[in-house]
Structure formats: C-alpha cells, structure tokens
Length: 176
Image 1 (cartoon, rainbow, N blue to C red):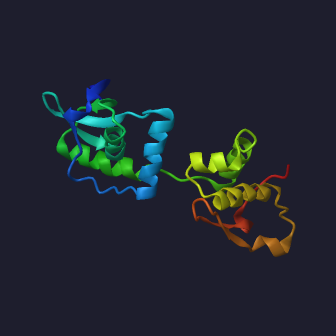
Image 2 (image 1 turned 30 degrees about the vertical axis):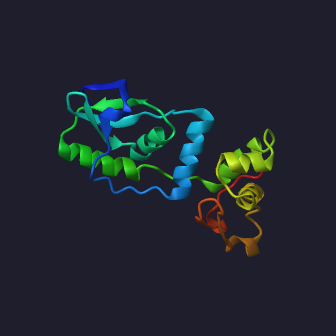
C-alpha cells in the first residue's frame, strides 16, 4: 500500500469508526489495561486521515480506548490512505486475523516461564486462572504421547486455555 507513515498523534484527534463490529469481552479489555500499566503502550493503531488533523481508527479501537483510560495523550499510529470501502474491508479483515494458541506450544511456553515466575504471578500476568494455568501446563505431557497405545488413540481432550477439542489420534507428536 502506498503512502503509509508511522507517527505520534494526539488522542483527541483520533475517533473510532462507527462501523466496527468487533467486541472485546470485559475480562480481555481489563487485561489490556493491565498490560498497558505493566509494560506500556506497545502496538500502533491503524488509522486513516479523514480531514486535516482528524483521524479515524481502522484497527485498534480497543487499544485507543485503553490508551485514553490509562491517561495517555498521544499514541503511535500507522496512517494509511484508504477510501471508505477499503477502510471497512480492512477493519473486517483485521478483526478476523487474530488467530489462536496451539495448545501444546502454549503448554511448553508456560512450562518454561514457570521456571522464572511463581505460578500465581504468571497466572495473574497472563490473566489466567491458576487452575487453568496448571491444566494447560499439564498438556505438555501430551508431547510424550505414545502413538502405539491404541486405547489412548481415540481420546478427545479439551484445552483449558482455548477450549479447542483435540483428538489424540490426530496428534503427531515426537517422543522426547
């Protein structure tokens, strides 16, 4: 895309668009606020200039709201020139591009972090219930799954982190 720049913009000059269908659960929004307080504002907001010194959010409405709530007066923005149709399509597509966690990789990542942080501290930092944290870490034991154990092959488990159903017979996990 042509004519993209990154710049610091006063929050008072940025308005959310009126067509964004994305909703962030309250728990997730509160986690976003805590992250801003813990490490600061890290991710730019995608905006387009609609008039001189007036910008509209294309992606990042929740980040903008959290920035306001935490007392920021300016934020870094990616400013892209887009017409209405392109901006609306981009908003939809950016909302859809969020992905999800792969349960075994998440378990390994959390197992690694738990060596540096107390379980309670880690759970609080990543906004996860302590029992959910422990259950997710326990998924790492699936990396030792023995594919020759036929009675285990048809088991279906639910990841406590993302609620994704995992059929163990579909897992292709290498032993240690």
